[in-house]
Length: 178
Image 1 (spheres, rainbow, N blue to C red):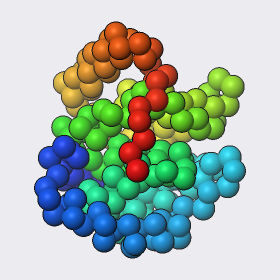
Image 2 (cartoon, rainbow, N blue to C red):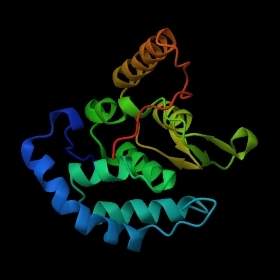
Image 3 (tube, rainbow, N blue to C red):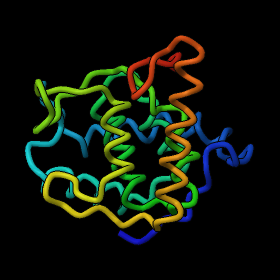
Image 4 (cartoon, rainbow, N blue to C red):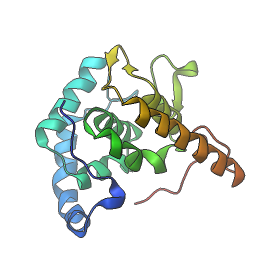
């Protein structure tokens, strides 16, 4: 997948905000046609998730639509799909702006290969940011300076979160936007 010229959500303009309402009618129906979510999660193997990412790329999703994926209220797996999509196509310089507010999510998701068979979305996201291998598939390489910056920001987030009594390492759940 080529690198997407996605702006960080903090820099989206009023047009994206206004289009979110229009997108809500269009995108969920399209997403329902792409993501078939069984009880244990949407992806049985790496070809399932790659096919789904390819379909999203083909749709040329907008920043507002990505935000809908990341904030999806019904499924942690659809949210994870949004993060996988970003990890594949987002300009690495903008990646932290997209994921920062989610690194302490406590929503549980079943992940093959994790201890106990499940993890939190925040812990899974941290792994997605720090590693290049995802279920035997190579993720796009993050430039070393950007990876180091993300790792430093994760440490700072953990320190701030612990200081506020929330714990760290993807264990505290922020308020859910609706």
